[in-house]
Image 1 (cartoon, one colour):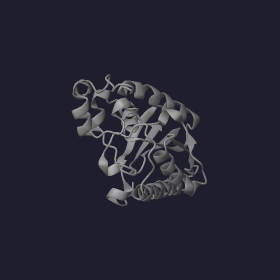
Image 2 (image 1 turned 90 degrees about the vertical axis):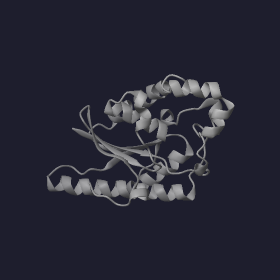
Image 3 (image 1 turned 120 degrees about the vertical axis):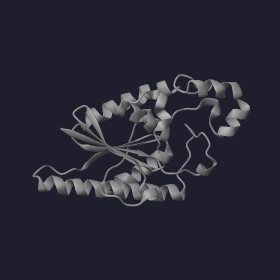
Image 4 (image 1 turned 45 degrees about the horizontal axis):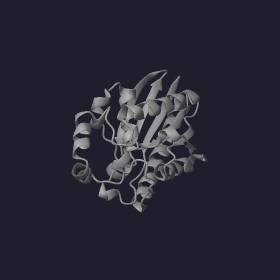
Length: 223
């Protein structure tokens, strides 16, 4: 029994070019972000159609998207809505798919954080897994809720195809867990806006089929 996960990061947001720590700040997609989401939705629909055609040739059941889960933040929800459209679905909101809370760093740029909170920034740079800004979450705390949510979602849809739409930080943490990568190396995994990763779970054994592919950035590919 194979469960196929399409793990998606939301599209680019309003003000995204400023590269600020948004975290739990509920910013919407920009027009570019909506366009990115549409292209990612199209790629997923086409990929599922190819899988269905291949399955039918082999006398197997069709590969349909059974559910789309989303973070409660608008940038993820809007992206999820675009992915849902070709399949007649509505996003299922899961609170534990929200982005990491950056506490007093939220809304600030990288340089502003270094200037305003130099000691805290150095502590975080030394140990980004267990240190958090005041009022924020550690990477390990994010891992706990993200992995718990993902495990439940995969159990609910075992043997089917589903999508999870979340955030750069959250997706990196989940991918670390899936690939057995220590959290200390979380920033070695890139997550572009509106990028999709495809993971097949053979029972509980994950196989990465595609990682951080952005249709808007790289154009069309065929797996």
